[in-house]
Image (tube, rainbow, N blue to C red; front, side, top):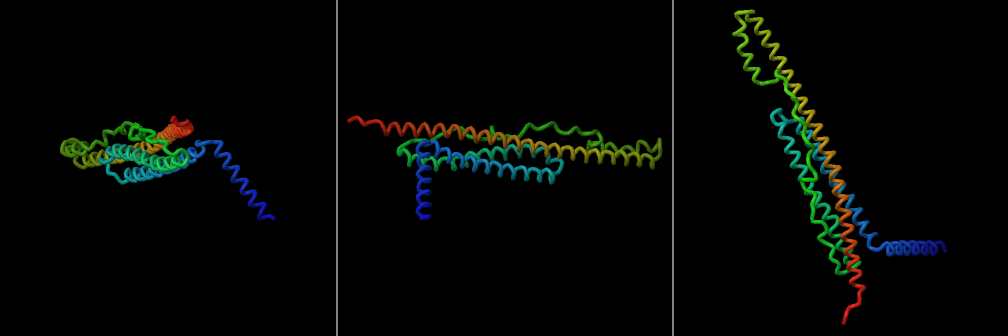
Length: 236
């Protein structure tokens, strides 16, 4: 008796779920497809941006001082590539399921193309780069060449030993200043990468939401049109 009661309860639950589904119309199924697409796109976006951030920080740490300015341009190209991959993920997650759904609900319904706009590099872009760290005159590489003449010029006034000590102190101060300048530049780029990834994350999520809204509206409208067309009597 318990098995029969369980079977009846399961059947009743199934019928109730089907009734709610039919009452909701195609929006329920479309919403399910788009909810799964949102998760897939968000996961893809988060994964790609996490990889970009980790790689960019590693390059900043390894790069020589002369290579640091070029890292901003590389970040921009990588973010543009993420936008293209996000487009493909969105199309893969929405196109085939929605076509199958339309074929089952309203054969003959044309629901694609849905949205001609793409994410692209204009949506996912690097944040505005700050001005380079101000360099102390002590960090100027030309200072080393100027120091070469100090011992010769000062030897007649303060003695060669004192001139060499003075030159050494100035050179040491220049080396310290240059190290600090490079450290500030690395810190500036780290902050830039962090802001760029955060900005791209927010922009990508907004773009996903925008495309999902437009896609849902377009698909439901197409299914409604197809349903009305099938319901209209055929003129003989």
